[in-house]
Image 1 (cartoon, helix red, strand yellow):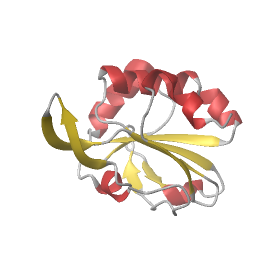
Image 2 (image 1 turned 180 degrees about the vertical axis):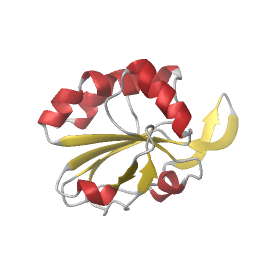
Image 3 (image 1 turned 45 degrees about the horizontal axis):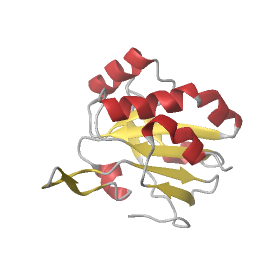
Image 4 (image 1 turned 90 degrees about the vertical axis):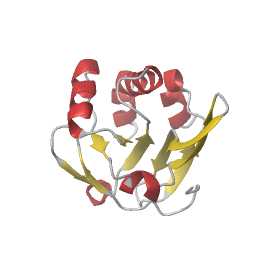
Length: 149
């Protein structure tokens, strides 16, 4: 898993509207890159809606917000439209971005071990350096974990 102070891996992916999103387009801006397991599930919906509800605050602080999950573009489009999400959601079914950021690994649910997406948020500065890694995401209060006090 990447850590604070590491250079953020470059990435590109297709968002919910078929647009190519490339990390190089955001150099000079701060980025909230959040990895979530599945569209339209309770925790992922809370997290996305918290970021949506605080989107103008995040923009005012200079952040762009990008979500990434293994879901398809079509799934992202339905999720985005249902909850009126104003930021790109990248489809990563091959797990290229997810694994580059170390957001895939062993999970334990009810004593059952399996591999899956590790809900993680990376806060990246204007120069592409990781400022913070949030591993214990509070889905309904995530913005307050991102914005420095």
